Image 1 (cartoon, helix red, strand yellow):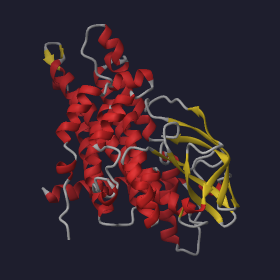
Image 2 (cartoon, rainbow, N blue to C red):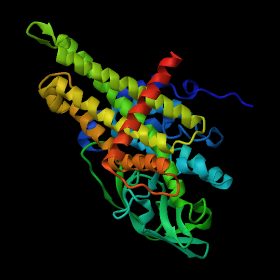
Image 3 (tube, rainbow, N blue to C red):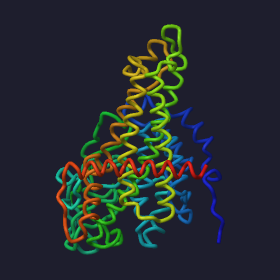
Image 4 (cartoon, rainbow, N blue to C red):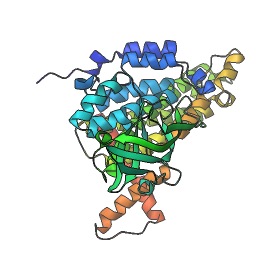
Length: 420
């Protein structure tokens, strides 16, 4: 058996950090809502778009734990840029083919995806957001394959991807299809723009009679929802790494500012209220690190992550949001001011308001807070009531879901302490 190659041997983190510091201007990406092509080209050379792909097909074969450390570094520089990487490696065609493709599909497409052909995952529709069972896009059987018709909303990487996994309704149920974006009838109707996560390529896809060969269905007819939700569960895990990258930056900036700033002849961090906020930031970062490490380790061990991915994502998104809010409050008007404005005044800029906008997006992507909270509450009720009875939802059920998140987080942190 060939010994495993660690990520330090295949992904030089020092080299990655040097590249990010030198070539990735998070403020410019946010301002222009675009990632320069040279940045994507550089990340491809560094292996950022083949992190999770099998080594046998040109990937780096990183574990979830190793992958999270890379994603954290990228998200700390630009959360929008991190969306390119996590979508391709986790949710897009690359991730799904690696997990559920046939041997022939993996051999044909994974080397191309590892070499830099980008991928996307098209599930959401205007009438099927949190409920993918309502998917209206259709797949009509024809000689040699299918014809796909429909419209997909908020497809990350959609405007730039060569390959998109499209969920559509076939006669035998919803299925996953690998669609070439260069096919006749495939169009990017619009690039969507958002409050935060700028630089992310996200758009509306339209399919009009797009032909998909029979060899490009992933799984079977009727497997689409199961496969799609499985990929969503795994995709949520990387939210913990993205949240951690943002939260660490908030802590760094807050420590530096409160140690430097003086009020009434004393350092700002000597103020009891400020010290309380700094302590809360430490609490959030330590718990985020523990959650990210635990879910990555369990995913690497092959554990069922359906519930844990929801618990982790709920905490991670809210923790990043709270960390950014704390950092903004600690910096006062400077926190609310854009980095460009600070820079124009001659101050060293800290993009705290950008971190706040980016963190808010984490509470919506890959399952909104409300949808995941309801799903956790439902699982708790069904477990208590038994499989034969569907218990009614209530305020107390949601409260129990919130308690489950907090218990999960403290369990993760306790595990971290034991390992030290």
